[in-house]
Length: 302
Image 1 (cartoon, helix red, strand yellow):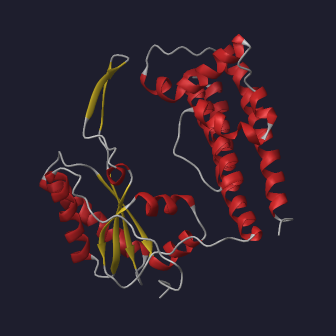
Image 2: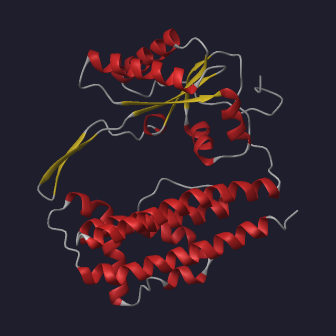
């Protein structure tokens, strides 16, 4: 079993920082998983409950609309020798039974990964699983396997990884750009502004992942813009902060992530979208050029 032979790192194991009822929920879920899925090697809590920055319950009035939010329990179930479909069906049944006990329970989101594939992803430094390992809490450990430490990748591997990240995020950004055109044709300019935000976000994600193989789950376009501007001077020239109209347009597309969804009074005109589309297209062109260049450079490094 692909479990050792590589230096390992210890994960956190205690959930004593959580309130008693949260600990009880997690103990129940762990027990249910072990009863249903005996091939379980590890159960890992990740996300906000692992970092202890979760939201218990938040209700607020946003633009005249009542919105509520509470954090999920994000749980990775690591198994060996099982099919994804089989484990998935069992996790669905655990999920269903869990909610039967109370409709006010904290929501739970399960993902499943085979130990071999998980260690392969960790060894290659894949950012999603690396973050789980860094911040996660080990709720159960069979003792049969260990999680590996990232090894030093050669540039061919970095090139391959960067290409995969680029293909994924750039395709997603372009898909949102197509949605912009469809919304524009319907004269739904507010929805178009949201899709423009999502296109920008994924172009920025692509740049970060290609250049660093790391990314943060961030929706604030100002922070994303700041994180990538060092990779090309052109990125700061799409929305020039000293030009009032550019500043207004950037503020509009940045705020669209929330306002386009929740604010019935959010105003976006046809002229706004006409001005924003070429800017986002320019961002896509720059993203494609600098990412492809960087990926090519990886192939020449030794």
